[in-house]
Image (cartoon, rainbow, N blue to C red):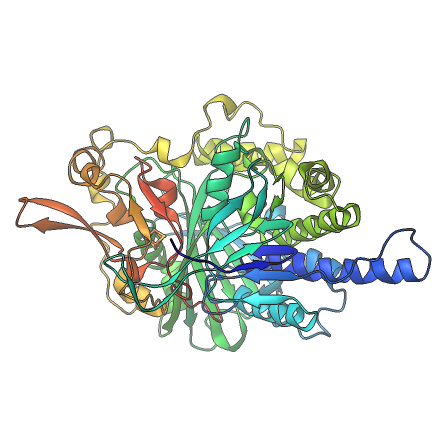
Length: 566
Ligand code: SF4
């Protein structure tokens, strides 16, 4: 029996992303203001003393696992810190111009006006990883404890299923599953409120939602995968502060997909492509879609003579309002991408994540004042969300992604009508048949020409790169002597049914070449090999595997990509 240390905190935030960092800092500010008002006699209440707040982060440091496009709407940050620029917020550049391109295989059509949802005036192009590092410094200055290399592996419950904290993963387990000389058991962090802000498809949120049925009567969560590269391009290739969004090539009209190019300082360009993880054809490879996107003449012209600097991949909650789980339970709140707060029409989630965290902080303050951490008080978080600008922004676009499950053209007509009507779906989507992405994937015998999708795509290592080369640019590192953090619940399916039915799509949907079907001499068949050290923690496999037999869990603390500066 492993003896674990228990550490009593008051509030524990899981994940040092924008939602939780904003939440923790806002909570500290609210407590200080509350105490000042009590002292001054403005508020009739007790002072709240000695609140211990911790943020745990699985990455080697804050920002290491943070990836985003990223054009930031500063609305929430202005509320958190009106003088954020004076306080040194590391924005890269202000957005100066926008464009929207429709791409066919060889042609580019620039829209004479940028559709209103894709206008970015007043926003900033940022490295979200840097913004998080900066917010973490502010948190630490305010007395918040931040623990990097602390992967939360399990939720702790009391006998009534109230959340009472999280268990941190142990260190020093060898690949044989046995403790090594450096073994350290993980601690149990106990808390009055635990806030899950783990990003999309949080591994703890997945456990919690399933155990407490928090997705009852909600539509299934739907995700996209964004793949991004940073390039240094020759001066004059792309204007600093210019933002382009694209639709069309290379995705087919049944697949949700689109690209971006953002001009940053010092001739750095952020370029990426998003593929909906509710695609039909099992032969689709989101990484290859992105590489193909770069071969379009309008894109390759920008990158010509440039060099790749960094690579990363991250999933995005694309489902929106209808797919949000219940946001609270006894002792726990869900924030940010974990709770599907992204605006999928605008492809913006930083400001909505931060605002959700700030509203969670306001709810926690109420709970601290009442000394009640049950759903009786924590349910007020949902009311606060419904009464805030989050509702005003997200509810009108509630049907945006759902419409894409009927194909691009009906979705675009629907998007236009929704814009005029405040979000009504106009019959272009059938809500009753809105499916989770993994349920939509067709079997090989239902797809024509899937194998020909990428026959012209060559990886020349100048413009286009294979997955392994890209992973190198993601600075991914895991200790090899540990059990794989990708749990295959039934490996026999991979070697039998999946070969026939879907052609092992894990080899394609993973953007980091983690999954490989390898011939086994002993059994005389191909079997799944897991190159887990390549994993960039995007969770795509957990989301889209058609049999739902891949369970992503946190590896040993500190492992994973290093997205510093991305
Ligand atoms: Fe993403 Fe899964 Fe591949 Fe890791 S193994 S990079 S989580 S798809």
